[in-house]
Length: 168
Image 1 (spheres, rainbow, N blue to C red):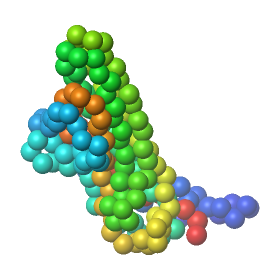
Image 2: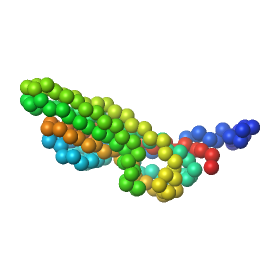
Image 3: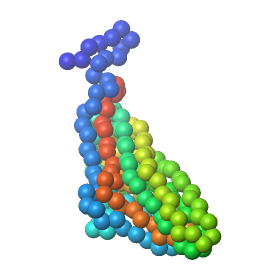
Image 4: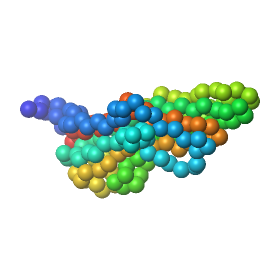
């Protein structure tokens, strides 16, 4: 039972209604050399995807999306910079909801390794893009650029959606 306060709010606001998590469980990292400029799903070598299907209980709720993962790249014997971008993608509305970018460098003649453990968060209205309480699909994607081998889709990469009650 909710407690009602003088300002009109109540203790029901801010409660976790449900939590759904999708993750890559297998240790089968995918790699790509000389990455093309295109977004690609965070998928392991055995086709496990860091994604989650989610159906909100109420259109007035807030959705907290938290995605975590790791990628790295290894440069060749020539000097190259490598760039990686990561985003949370709402496939239901074909919309990016969060994004980050990292640029790494190597020196000429070296075999350098660079990468990042990353966390992305987004706080959304459950009814963003007029989805109401319809099911939606969220996943993480990478954009790699540079002349090296990129490794991604690693064990433990995940995306979690928390539905939080909010006043209407």
